[in-house]
Length: 543
Ligand code: G4P
Image (cartoon, rainbow, N blue to C red; front, side, top):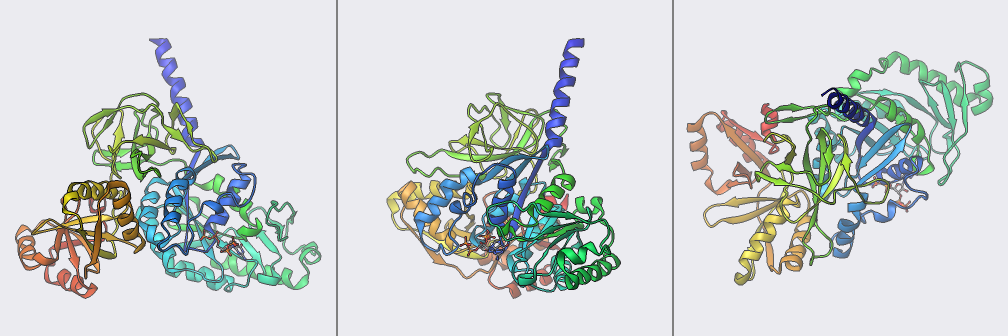
């Protein structure tokens, strides 16, 4: 008995250590702000890659519109690059990759459910862009802690104080600079580290890590004028004075609750300001956090294993239908070859070859801890949002489907293959490629996506992987919203009145497909007791 409890005490300690060591996050940005470049530099620091360019080569070409080879390549390769793990400063850093292309935005939104914090990259010249706003809305909704990295200081950008104001007003979050740029563009001298009181001098260098750090105890020290010359030194002193007057002290609690974003400045391509970012990230970012389930919250320290699937990757080779399901571990310890409950299917499953993604290698692992993401080979058992547990039949909440923006009806071109088409489209929907809405009468399949590229991907995959020939006919809907109400009478009246604009999603939830934003506003006014949810995560909103 004594031995047993000692043993489990030891085990608990080991789990706790593993949890505290992990930092799982995503890098997000508007395309071209420098997400890939920054990811690569972080990997260089972490020793996960040896040369610059390794990540870049795997990136989907931004010009991709109908180049299927490129899409296929992306899908195949990004299994390896979807999760990148490395050790740095005593932490195991797990970076979850998010696709930059806006047509894959929904994939990014879902990946954000599996991270504990994010780094948001902003282009100093462009400031807050469209995609930045959308991604931040998701972070705000989930109260995800955010660190902002203002990139491309080696080029002329917006006036720093204006940019900070723009971040606060457009992203609806308080900011607090932790470093400060000294000039920009041609006059860029370096970054002042406000907390450590030192200056990192700028030297454009794309392959090496900048080591020229000069410590300065007091910005009024004349040494500063010698180092960066008088004018920039005075400018820096003035800026710092204003800054201390305008911004409150950095408050880690506010950062952790998603209310305050620390801001860093640098130039990713020149390896500049990245170390400050990574060091601070390792110091302040949250260890793995718990998640809500329909049976209360599960914390990482709960001894029983649980986790959820947030991404499914199809095999590149259509002859091998197996897929990889990405599972985020929330609590307990995952072990290879151990039976777990697949809650939705009410089925026991074990996994002989779970993989981890250390550096660029995929390797089979025996155990994994909260914060880790592992790959499970799947022959069609998993859907996005599925939960695995050691004990209990709860499901994790809040893996939302976002409101699609483009709608097309799927038409079967080969009546002999309708079964294949049905199976194919359902499997692709399980993978999260798009959303499917069924309209009556006639079981019409309306496919909704956030980008046009998705339709090409679906059509291509249906014919290549399932032998089902189809075409898409545009439908004139502009927005899908999920409808709920406690007022059954009003709900029924609404259903009768809007029959031609109603559909059901894959979980049989009622969806209103509004033809114009105005018609949605009208419906909201006409039926005040109905709630029109922008995402299918309304169960979470209500909780
Ligand atoms: P993304 O993943 O967010 O889409 O951006 P990515 O890293 O691909 O960067 C977009 C472009 O911005 C790249 O140029 C990259 O080299 C450049 N870039 C990244 N960081 C900096 C920086 O600190 N300063 C400057 N001046 N440019 C930066 P590209 O021409 O699209 O690609 P490439 O030919 O340079 O690879």
